[in-house]
Amino acid sequence: MHAVDDLTVFTRVVDCQGFSAAGKELRMTTAVVSSRIAKLEQRLGVRLLNRTTRQARPTDEGLIYYDHCMKVLAENQEVEHRLAEMKRRPAGALRVSVPVTLGYSQIVPMIPEFVDENPDIQVRLQVTDRVVNLLDEDVNIAIRKGILPASGDIMRRLAPDLRVCCAAPSYIEKHGVPNTPDDLKGHNCLLLRFPGSKRYTWQFLADDGSVSNLTISGNMDSNSSAVLIDWAVAGHGIIMKSIWDIAEHLNSGALMPLLADRWPRDLSLNALMPARPQQPAKTRAFIDYLVKNMRDHPIGKMAESYGL
Image 1 (cartoon, rainbow, N blue to C red):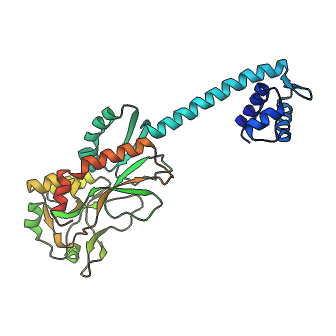
Image 2: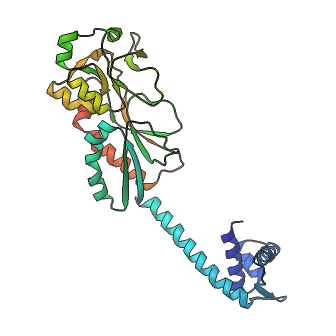
Image 3: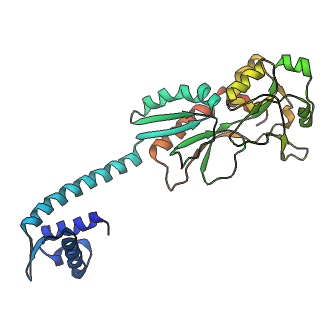
């Protein structure tokens, strides 16, 4: 038994003034109750109860310990109540990880309104293109894009996504339009660098409709999506980015879509959560908020216009 259970047994014996009556309330045999008290006294090194054939009354030491037990049990009950309340009511620190470009352009502006609607939640936002480990880094939610590797995390779809291969008009004018994914091998592709990366691949639809990986290369890479987008807009190469990251540049004409008939069409923005029987109310509240705000977002509609 947990130590608090010993406290409960002792206080019930004092309240009921006997082992038998306490056992009936606790659904334990008299022998088990007596054994619990004996072990408790042995551990504390004092006699807590004066026993007779019919009654058990606390000693002076027992009265002191009884007062202590009542305080501990009351505090424990209060903590349990607060934890139960948190399951029902969104509250506590919420740790969220988002990619840099998507984070700054879409998620960051949503946070103040979400906190206003949920004043008992404290958002701890991590903006990084690094793939975080949810459990090791104590992250409640990670927003991810693209084709995700299999994992034990729970995933919920937030909105449609599209990986757009594109370049600036100045780059196309100078280097020409690639007509097939294989043509990219003759172009300068701007690469997102991850820790430990040795090869760089982009995904395209094959002739049979399956998704295939194409190894690409270039003379410039970065661990920041924002940097790659700036380079592409300046005409230094081709990028393949989420439509959520580059929608404004596509709308303005600063970037031109390439190989649109070969983009994978079943992608989405997803929220990943650590696997657990039930997600905390704070996590559920934030996911529901994101779904509500991104479901009818203009960029989501833009992605749908490409046939998603």
